[in-house]
Image 1 (cartoon, rainbow, N blue to C red):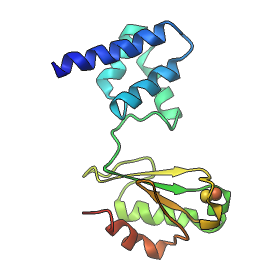
Image 2 (image 1 turned 90 degrees about the vertical axis):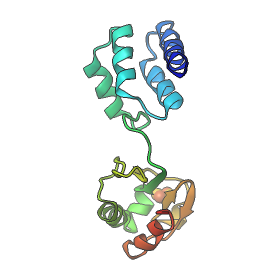
Image 3 (image 1 turned 180 degrees about the vertical axis):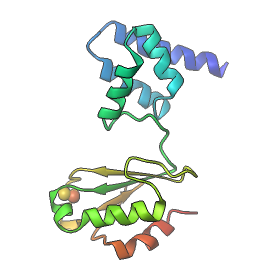
Image 4 (image 1 turned 180 degrees about the horizontal axis):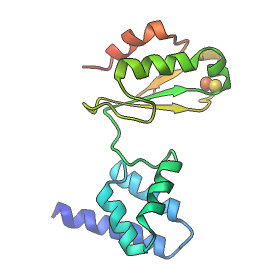
Length: 155
Ligand code: FES
């Protein structure tokens, strides 16, 4: 039953795209919204049904930050690397989080706890460097505060 619903949802998304051939990105965004990411089998199905080569779909997915090929971790950690945050040391904050989590920006930890991403200006420049975890703003970050910050979300 669940499999049937999943097939119907994907089919509906593909049919919407077929009515408007220029919105391939929209189709991929709709799949991301529906499933939280774009599972490999869905991408293959889209390729088969739309006759768009799989390699082209993969290159779109890796180019657009809003398209995800992997599920999001339990906690979403975004570090602002906009100009104001950058000049106040955002790069060192990113490096420290990467070191502590053992992943690079854009990846999810093996245990599925954290997804780390870098983002551009979040409109709270006075708080920079800014880290946002699950929508909670943590301003004036520096590498020495990272351990304690991540600990709050590890349980
Ligand atoms: S540059 Fe980071 S919030 Fe504006």
